[in-house]
Length: 162
Image (cartoon, rainbow, N blue to C red):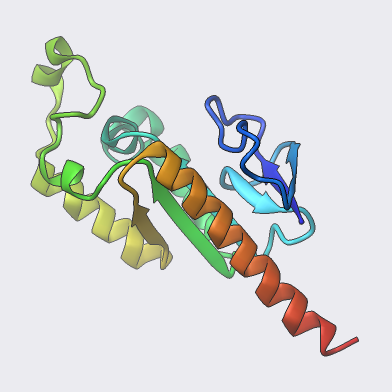
């Protein structure tokens, strides 16, 4: 299995050698941050590092349209996920722990409740699953396990037709 990590991933997963059963390829993806070579139409994972990043994608006018275009592309993929490197409780306590500097928080016009509403709207509109993890390392393991499971399903489904 060759895992594709998008070139725009600034602090990407799979830099540590714990992944020994896959090759990591860094190249551009049309949508998302992680997929499997040759199966870009089958599985794609979009990673979010913080509630601040998610807030920027969902609520800031400057990046909201780009985010929704990305979601439209993901909606065409069978298995699609938004994988968060933080637990769901962080959505409920936004902007605490968001990574947004305290001095800039006064400019935030979105409450935690409204951010949750925006997330639910994305889940419903694009039929995409948000997965929350306790930490970055758990998110990395979860990403690998999702890719590995999809790979196994693809292999078992397509080996029968050969």
